[in-house]
Length: 65
Image (cartoon, rainbow, N blue to C red; front, side, top):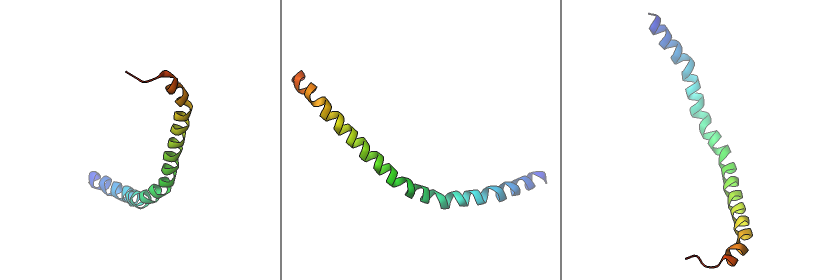
């Protein structure tokens, strides 16, 4: 009998949390998507700046064998 009560209590407590997570997960994903795009853009900009800074050294080093 105690096991049944614990299972019912678990279902009552975790079902609303599960439904809440299912509803909120797409909203969190939509909010984080622009931030991810900004991060990808900034990484590209920093990689470009690093390549521009390293270009004179690569040119002076000559061709690789």
